Amino acid sequence: MPTGTAIELRRAKPSLMLRVIKWVMAKRSPVFPHTAQEFKASIAERSLPQDAPMPSSFADKYQVREWKAEGQKVITLHPKGGPGVWHMLYFHGGGFVLPMFKEHWPLVAAMIDRLGVSVTVPMYDVVPEAPASRQDALADAVFAELAANHDPAKIVLNGDSAGGHMAVALALRLSKAGGPQPGKLALFAPWLDLTLADPAIAAVEPNDFMLKIGTLRACGEMFAGERAPDSAQCSPLYAAKEDLAALPPTRIWTGRHDLFIVDSRTFTGKLVEAGVDAKLYEYEAAPHVFMAIVPTAEAKDCLSLLGEFLGR
Image (cartoon, rainbow, N blue to C red; front, side, top):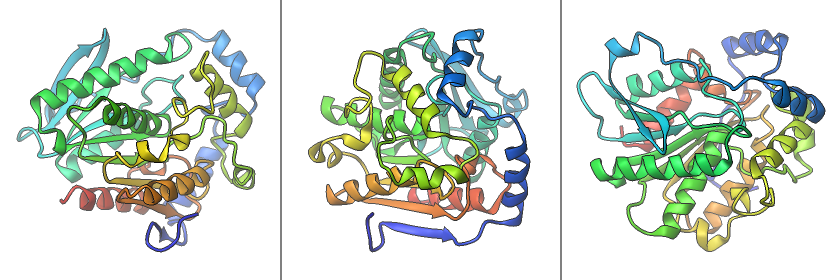
């Protein structure tokens, strides 16, 4: 675990609102089944999942462009006054297998409203109905389109959970390919190791009412397909030091009641060791992707720090 200023505990106690919302959320049916067997059965039995539609109010609040890349839908939102100085390429979470949730849209809106950024959201095809390569191809194509029309140094790659994985993976591919590079990398509770190999994660699991190790491992295997889940190609945590060194300045936000906190700490340490300007912000008792609970003090602090990162 990195020391010094690489990790900062932002809130030592959860806010009252967060505690109440966590209690309510814990009473609901989990987004992911809590066993690998149940997860596999739910995927095998499901109909093709559909993205939560963009709220109709967005058409009045923002400049909206709907377009396609690699045959998949993409939505770009600009502030009403025009494109922001920074353009965020945001990948939603969902374990690579679930579509855009309705809870993602308020987070997108909060980033536009509070930071003045433009946001592009790829509505990517999900696994296993489509191969993971479809997601990568879309990410590459969308970045290329944005970089052709916006200063790449003012593009920030962002994502939550599996979307955080997609943002890191894209940044690594871009650094190897050469050409335009993103200016910054902002990660919300990123999934960095598909295998969750670190034994320390087991101590966090009882506090995480959303994610379970066995389910995530099964999900990771489904995403990896014929690839090794613990390869650097599938798990950015294992990227070589020289590859990590090419990443842009990076900030990570993760709650301490989130399975991914352990790997977030390890990844931050590897980035710092590789010479990257990197920092992890932690929140006591905060659940997975807590920043999507936008009314909470924790989410507001996260977006405030993101604004500082972007020089707002």
